[in-house]
Amino acid sequence: MMVEEEKSRVRKGSVWSGTITIGLVNVPVRLRTMIFDKSVTFRFLHKKDGSPLKYQKVCIKEDKVVPWQEVEKGYEVRKGEFVVFTDEELKAARPESDQRIRIDKFIDYLSIDPVYFDRSYILTPDNNSDAYSLLLTALEKMGKAGVGRITLRTKEYPILVHPYKGALVLTTLRYAYEVSDPSRLEEIKELKEPKKEEVDLAKKIITDLSGEFDITEYKDTFKQNIDELLEKKTKGETITVEKPVKEEAKELMVALQETLKQLKKK
Amino acid sequence: MSEKLTKVEFTNLDKILYPKLKITKRQVIEYYIKIAPKMLDLLVDRPLVLTRYPNGVQQEGFYEKDAPPGTPSWVETFRSYSRIAERELNYVVCNNLDTLIWLANLAALEIHMTLSKTSAFETPDLVVFDLDPKSPAGHDDAIEVANLLKEKLDAFGLKSYVKTSGKKGFHALIAIEEGHTFEQTRRFVQKIGESLKKQTDKVVTERAKSETPGKIYIDYVQNSHGRTMVCPYSLRATAQATVSTPLAWSNVRKGLNPETLNLFSVVKIADNPWRGLFQDKQKLGDV
Image (cartoon, rainbow over all chains, first blue to last red; front, side):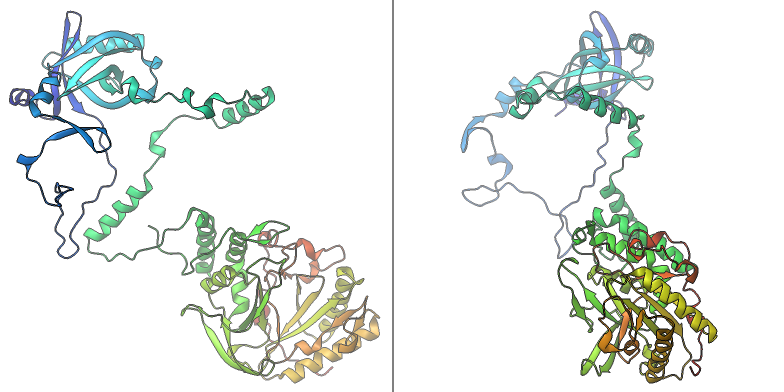
């Protein structure tokens, strides 16, 4: 939970405000949401009356709903064995949010592998934009990014501050222990060196299929279908449920469309 | 989601029906979809008999005269007493694309049709000359006889249409006016056959000689009530997935190999040589 004082400082549209500190230099910034999860979510409803359902905490032993006052937090050390933490203990252990993005050093932006990237936020200048503009321009010109830390709410993250489309973007990173190392897997260790001719052939195929990356080419078909249905349903149209056409029948559908077109012409 | 293109629910699309060429049921359905604009006109109102090969052509198919159990309500059927089967049959009639696709999905690779329509089932509207070469006679012999037959029919002022049988033989057809009987058409074919026999020793017309090696048997008995011939554009249950292919007479020349007319090649033919078949309704004269 954010402290009251901090909440009031956060301007409309931003989730956090503070300063980027690089040694003795301060750059006042605000943090804005950049990533919006657009995947389809549904609420559970009661079939009988369409009312939304809520979750309740039920004691496994008593099979009874437990009120909040009777709830505490436990860490499962072994199956069914818990170490209890009080709210006070947890509060004391949490880092304090200090409105600072501490930059420890600058690195080549491309030297960090995307597997560590977690969530991105847009940084916008707060009050004074000169320092912001200077930092942005310098990073753009050198192809560098700042690495450091931030405490958001009660969690501390490693972060990267880097230019993106004429702005500074902060991307939280995953900790090293959160990402598993594939080179430790047996299947990976046992990989054999391919023959030179094979590599040449593979390289040729890759060259032939090379292109520019365009993320807009990729669509979430489930979401598109749901959006279409939603439009129809909100207009009051009745929906007939179709069995999904399997991928394998798709080429038949193409032939069908062509034949139906020809039969119509008659 | 797009509106439904067909009422048919596809099943077992990856099942291989022609093992030699690894042709799946999906490809068979695709063939019938693609050929439908030419084929459907020729099937209108005609009771059909199916040969189904649910386990592929390497196994024996089964002959189905009745609409099978589970036939959807939107498939047209036609009830008629069959003297051959000696019972009432419920034939499938294919008057639309969905029915054709449904047949393909049943692995009804071979579709056979009667020579009369539901509207006048007792009387023929087609005459068929089935030229069936017996080994060592082959398609070249059948082509030679087919051309002799065409000349003869031309001489009577009758316009004929030709197709491959999908095997080694050829089928020549004449569309006729209402008012003929099967007895008349049978006698007509028999007489033409006999006169061809005088021209070439390759032809036999007697049932007893139908299996004579090296001869081409003209089966006039096929022109009977309830008898069927393989439909134009039907697939055959042959290793090469051949098609009973309508052709222009000008293409029925020595060197034509009917085995090359198959599931893959026939859909690429732009020409529709049988377009005018049912516009040319003719009267059989005396031979």
